[in-house]
Amino acid sequence: MKTVFLKMGAEKTMNAEYIKNAGDCLKQGGLVAFPTETVYGLGADALNEKAAEKIYAAKGRPSDNPLIVHIAELSALEKIVQDFPEKARKLSKDFWPGPLTMVLNKKEIVPKSTTGGLETVAVRMPNHPLALEVIKAAGGYVAAPSANTSGRPSPTRACHVLEDMDGKIDMIMDGGEVGIGIESTIVDMSVEPPMILRPGYITEEMLENSIGEVLMDPALMFMTEEKAPKAPGMKYKHYAPKGEMKIVEGSRQSVVAVINNFVTNELENHKKVGIIATDETYTCYPKGLVKSIGSRSDDKTIARNLYAVLREFDEAGVESIYSESFEEASMGQAIMNRLLKAAGHNVIDAEQAELGGIL
Ligand code: AMP
Ligand code: MG
Image (tube, protein in one colour):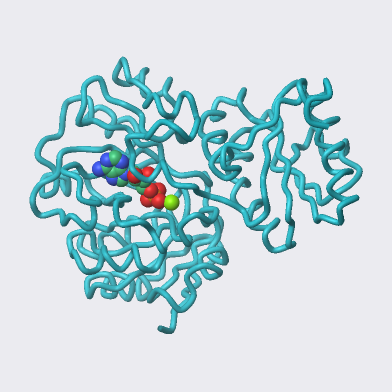
């Protein structure tokens, strides 16, 4: 298949003809990647069973991992969900369009291929003008997971989509770099109290300020691999770079010392090593390929750079990656959730390592 690459212009200029082409392609059951404010999505008509199935094939995605249905207008909900609880309505007022996905009871019309066999459907209204236009042009319901090969870091630029999807999908719409850089917060509104299934840009505190108590899926709090999370997709290894990745936790001083020690050892073994540092620590690492993912005082930048940095390490052929830890940021839960998955939960306690446990 030849993948058509459409450049929309740096200022996200709307190109009516391109949007119509994308909409027609989706209506005919094709696959179109487009930017949203979180990451690039791989779109298919959510109400067309065969089209949704194609997404799993293109991504190599396990078939029990449901897709998020993207809508452009609130009135579109009626056709696909059984009920829209008062709290869900309040969240939609406060956060839509935006990086919040709500799980609701589905109507018959939503095919099982879209929901991975579940009786609920995940719905989101993205806050990106191009995405909204494409959804409207496609008839209003676009299933769109991240436009990467399953397991790889999610795409935050059109070139990342091209890397993974060239020849596998009909069209890529290049709308420049995305704004947020990590996937939406998912909250299950089919249970009471509502439950966060995936942390994201919209934090637990923001949700509670809007609707009162929300619970956190216990599998997320412990952040171990053992407990099965409630969002089926959260159990899979995700976002992973090709190199083996480890996260080093502890005081800043210990983390830097321990990472530098590991890097020295790896270099002695002729390994290519990468370090995920911050603006504050960038100069503390004399050896290895060092990349800052932003300042600790600006967790939004850290979130935006995360996946691109992991892909840059892949391109450089890095075999071993050491990352600092980011728990304390307000988006820390979301950032750490992605980092832990990328590292396969491989975490080193810097203080213990310094005491001679590992080094
Ligand atoms: P992605 O589209 O790649 O961001 O992944 C979508 C995420 O939403 C996966 O982790 C899915 O497991 C989760 N998800 C989608 N639909 C549902 C649902 N009905 N119930 C629970 N989780 C869902
Ligand atoms: Mg994904």
